[in-house]
Length: 306
Length: 320
Image (cartoon, rainbow over all chains, first blue to last red; front, top):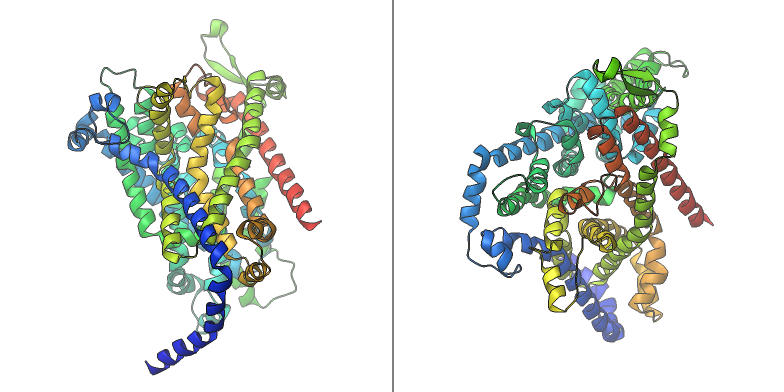
């Protein structure tokens, strides 16, 4: 307690000269610059938020108001009616899609995280021939766009007969060179060699060291890899669009696209349905991202996501 | 070829020609290499085999086997036939050119805006205000890509969106799906989607710039703009190159956004509007898998060459 006070006191003394000198010298230009920065950032923030605001407002409107009222403000509040339409439409197919999306995104990301950490640990802590080559392959394949591999993957999977099954979507999501690279960076920093040596001297097997020591130490790294993979899986559209035919296996992205693209094929106007569906589909992703933001922000800082 | 690579880590350990080790060390290496087996096996299945299979299939062509096309189709070896066809495929190369021109214009604008936002954010002194703005700018990153495209297509649409109505009020005919405005519309959508994310990468890198240098420049009387231009931007050039590279790769595989625009305006957005759309339409509309495979290989080669070229060009500039 007393040392804490002492520390703050000395820190204050150290900072005092700079602190008192700065405002006098900088104030005039600084205030103006702060205003310019604030105005600029307000414009950027409005640009970023306005379309989402538009979606929120219009998800509460019925069909008439959608076309006839001011798009940026509420008319009659019909969110409840729109939601109940969404629940009942086509036997609640929307929530089936949401469940599928959670399964593909969450399951895919979870398995991929485990595989990535094992591989990252191997590439970081062991010296074996072929390791350099493996690392080169991992980094080199960042340059291969996933979209480009999807059609060849479809050709292969149709030979294997797994097209239009959940595996056609899940298996590609299990493998992420970027996840391995990120995991390796985390293992480099979080797992000290001395600890591994000590465990080996105590006679622990390599499997046991990995499961009982490395994995618990990698909690932050695992959370980061998981959340980045989850987001990119949730956004994935091309893979499920290519692989899946039956609408019972679709994801939210494919389902919403099909509602939008085939809107002329049905007698009912699905615009209100599509809008409220789009709004609802943001919620799970937003929850994951907000609750885990400290992980994906560090992940983004460590390297860019594919 | 590449399949040898991925099984290499596991296999080469056994025939290791490194200076003789004690047995337990070799066993340890072997166990350590084992941890990467699941990944490299998967890598073999989802990266190496599909590419190999696509190369293989691109040398075949589908032909009707029975007379009058009654007997179904069979694969016939075509040699480089698909590639010859691709080289003269005007639709495919037009889509490449279209996307290339778009990338040359859109990527600098998009990165410039992200850089501007990051620099403004970096100059904000108040911690709380800065974090508030940062969160606001990251809102689009939390919107799924297809939903973002949907929102903007609705905003652009003459019936629901505000732009056409605003244009009418001013006496201007605004049609964002017209051939001339289409790229502006798609470009803006992409800026909206990536602005916050790129801003975050650039901002993270800006935070790493040595603060004492900035202070010294301040003392010497440099204004905020001068400091940004002469110190901050040169200091983060590596990050800008990286984000540029990611943007180029992303642009060449652009698919989702134009597909939604096609659903809204099939007259102006053709089925082979972008290279990936051309490949998709060959595979799933024309059912010409072999030709789609050949186009995939060509596009992969172009992406690889461009990325490599861009990387060497920009890193050479940095060292000189």
